[in-house]
Amino acid sequence: MKAPVPQERQIRGQRAQNNYPILPLRPSVTIVAFRKQVQNTRQGFFDLRLNASGVVIRDCVWSTSHGKTWTSMPARRDDQGRWRPVVVVEPDAKQDALQDAIRTAMAAYQSRGR
Image (spheres, rainbow, N blue to C red):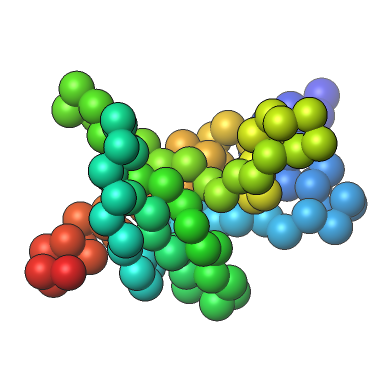
C-alpha cells in the first residue's frame, strides 16, 4: 500500500504545475521603508522585500489592535468600488508563515531605531 502524500507536497505539486511561485515555509523578508500614518487600527504603510527573489512589495499596511498585530497586502478599488488585493498569498499556511516573518522583520526594523 502506498503512503499518502502530505498535503503540503500535494499543494506544491499543484502550484508548480500552474507555474505559480512557491514560497518557502518560512520566507526571509526585510522591511525596507515604513511611513507612519495612524488611522483607526492602521499604524502605517511599509515596503517589504522578499529576500530570495529581491521582489519589493510597496504599500503594505501595518495594523495593531488589542495587543495583536497584522499586515495587509496592497489593495485597490475595482470598478464596483470594492477593495481587491493586488498581491495574494495562497494557501493559508503560507500566509501565516509570511505574517510571522513580517512581524519578525518589523521588530528588527523598529529595533534599529527607524
